[in-house]
Length: 253
Image (cartoon, rainbow, N blue to C red; front, side):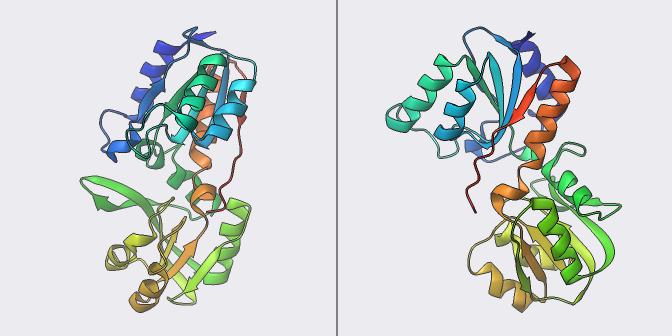
């Protein structure tokens, strides 16, 4: 058994939790401790939703559930209804919950951006797209057809990809920001990227990409953010000689 305080310290250092700014509702770090204070199993999921927590709590524990979108994503809520059920299930299952949003997105080895870029075989990448001193994405210089890149993205996320063919048929400068970054299309275009890969965006991001002359490939918010939590759980499991499991609960978005 690994102690929860030791894991909290190690994860905070690995992910630079205290250094990386984020949306207030992310509340990065240990969000829910368990009763035993120890861990014999690592679990990974994209969202700390009620179905995920129930499945995690039903497994032999005590366990640590690593998520990308944590318990407080919608802000402060009364502990009633589904919120109460989440807490009750976690307590009954001796389940601790640790959340990492942007720190996991941008991690150079375990991050969603880095791992998706590697799966796309983009080669050498560099950080790009500054927001409050943080580079949110990665970019690469390539020589690929738009359709070949779309095929690679379909294989990487294991599902459909929606393509806005607003840019050139031949891709030269590609940017990657996982999750819901489609609304940043104008700023991405201004950065000199001709093809932008993200998870999802608002409806208007499609015509905005056409007007900016940029290809916009939507791989799915959920699908593009499964990489980091899996890699993090696998790393911890290997380091501590413990089992790990991914709890897949896709939203289709």
